[in-house]
Length: 293
Image (cartoon, rainbow, N blue to C red; front, top):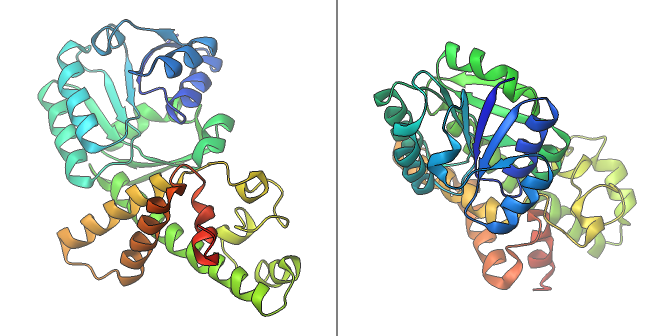
């Protein structure tokens, strides 16, 4: 039985830690939010008294935190107390530069490290079907794989340190822009007299097809499991999409890439959030396009 330390037991980290418990690992967890700690405890996670206590004796340490500054602060705090030679995996979505700084901290303290942000949302975290985008050495990926496989169904080694974060921001820039285009098309179709189902039947089997249509259709009806059929309860919140789109634009500026669609998507999601819908699913951007917020 491997001892795993899990720091960050929120809407994503909590279910991920629970899946490791179900796989037979001893999981010690910590989160600053009492509700997150309580929920994780019900799932079998042993709650540590502090972030420092959680890493004691752990063979694997996983962090799932909101932003780069939180990851850097957490790693600086816990790494000196970690077992030498342990593996530390950051599953947060953060900027590439912060990720590289975190890797450097791990190296200084003699730990193997991996950046492994995820795709799949809360549903994927609960079902254990996440995709992990990994940045780090072959050894780090090989060592991490048995644990990642208990939380996801696809592990992709994207390259050296920071490559996982790079892949994540590129992926979500596509997703944000595609969801806006999909929502625009359904709003236009309605105004042109098309039924939602008729347009879905065409788009889902034609050249306009995308995941935003077939798995996450932004209008109620065609895809029963989509958040649009549950009053846009967040599977992936609009606030998180805005965060990722901002990261994509920071990355684009840092390397001189031209991303006009990504930039516009970031602006539109900023408007959506400013109108009070940041806690809803990102497919709720359709409300902005309909002028209903």
